[in-house]
Length: 110
Figure 1 (cartoon, rainbow, N blue to C red):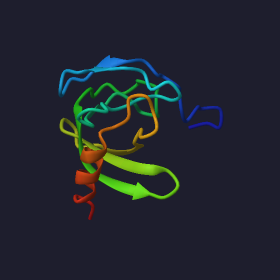
Figure 2 (cartoon, one colour):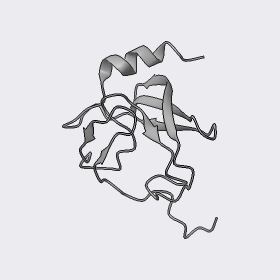
Figure 3 (cartoon, rainbow, N blue to C red):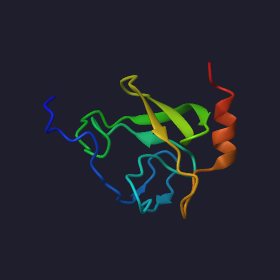
Figure 4 (tube, rainbow, N blue to C red):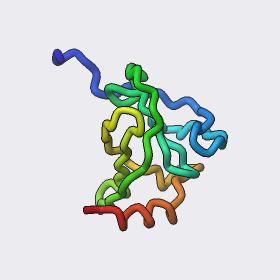
């Protein structure tokens, strides 16, 4: 990776969740990468927002860590290839992540 390579690409488009089927609106200020209703994601990025990953597997939310500076940090695991990734939850948006699901996932922390 060169210094010129972007580490983040804003890609804030809405989508239909492939896990629960709900319409997910754009976040409005950064790239939304998971469904706010069921917290599932899709393995589509190599770097955040680039949509360059060919896997395309669904990513299950497996744990959540509360962070005093950044809010909740979700960990997803791809059910197709096993990749794990972390993402900040959207709690202060117009369509926030389901807080009860975030709290339930904190019990999965090891």
